[in-house]
Length: 381
Image (cartoon, rainbow, N blue to C red; front, top):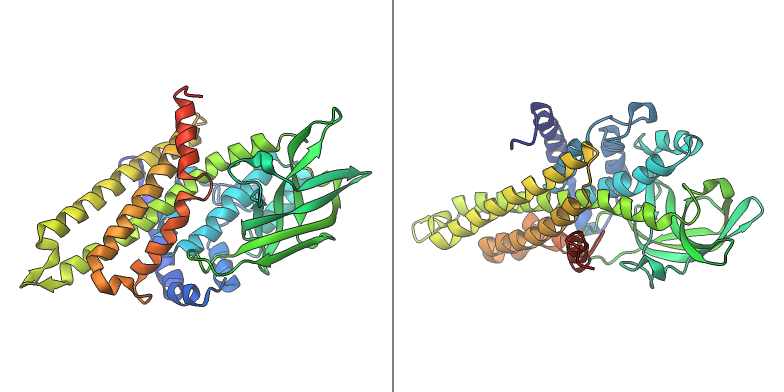
């Protein structure tokens, strides 16, 4: 891979060894029990996976975007649930605080959020809001030096576990002209009127924490406003642009993991007196998998390099997220086909990969919305 340096590849090896030795032995059990693991999450934090791109003054690692994406890719190669915890915490939790927070907010929150002891969430989705954020019903009204918030959020990663410190909420506020606009407010979990509960019964990412948040006359200081009032839509879109790179990395890592499992199996499974990999129908499947992964990696890494160079990358992030989520679906499906009946049982990691890939075409921009984003970059409006 010509887009990576020796330092990047050494970092990849470090994360791969951690994922293989620490996460892999727990993945099947946690998925089966649908259990979020605070213990494993803290280990990931202590390994430096929280705040990878953040400056060291805030407790981060001071690495570039490509290093972060490689880390998510390597975690996803083993387990999507743990990768989701890390990706959501970094891209949706830490990033908006760092990008738009005051120095007081950053100094208060970021050292905690990079310590490995806490998680932070991003609350956008509601019953009436998702792809269309204008459907947000959660409202915040200013009363003297406080915000009073009422509403609810759902499908919020990292919002309902014992490590959750708080959430960055997208809410509706009314400006001096009576116009409603999206505004972003930081809400700590122990705020009066804040309640969260875990949502279970998921098909995918069963060992990650997904929560439902209810806010009933929830009081937080006015100083918890993130950035400027009424700028929530802009902050959200920029946050999602960067977040799409991490979801793309999850698709790439999952595809890589499923491919490696299928390749090994095909080389060792014998039928009609030879490994099934020698049959053209199987060999061509594996060749197509390898090709798709290579193209996806090049596309994703290009977006990362553009971001690190301070150049526009929203188009490339949308393309990378769309393409990797699509090939993750295709490769996971073909991997199950190569395994045959054994790929349908839960003691086979490829079965979990097949389930985990499905969220990638939905989260942080559905495939339909991403095609719309790409079309707009072509001038089609």
